[in-house]
Amino acid sequence: MSQKPTGSDTQSMVSVAEFRDVADRVQITELLSRYHQYLDGMQWQRLNEVFGEDAQCHYLGLEIFGVSDVHLEGREKIIDWLRVNVGPFKDTNPTHFFSNHVFDIQGDLAKTRSYLHGIASEVGGVYEVEHHRAEYG
Image (cartoon, rainbow, N blue to C red; front, side, top):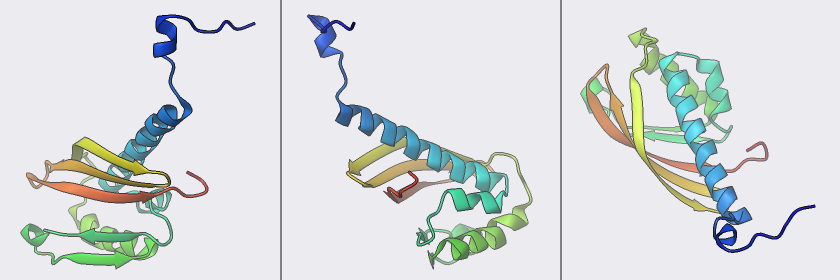
C-alpha cells in the first residue's frame, strides 16, 4: 500500500507534463547524437533512423568548403548528398562535437538550436533543427 506524500515530498513530485518534457529533451538529444555519430562513422544507411521520409535539410554557410548553400527534400536525397560530400573525407574519427542545446517544445513539434565545433576543419556553426514526433517516436 502506498502512502500519500506529505510535506516536502509533494514539492518533489513531477507532473506527467514535466516528465514528458524531460523525456522529449533526452530523445531529441539522442537523435542529434546519432546523426553526428553516423555521419562521423560514415554509416550512411543508419541515417535512415534519423530522418523521416519527408525530411528537409538546409545546409548553409558551407562556402569555406567550396560548397554553395544546399536545400534538400526527402531522406534519400539528404543521405545521398551527405555520402557524396562527407564521404570523400574518409575519416571515421569523431569530428563533430555539439553542445549548448536549447529546446522549444510545443506538443509534437520541437525546435532545437545547438552549437557545433568541427575539429577536422576547425570551424564551428549552429544547428537549428525542427523535429516532428512520428508514430514511432
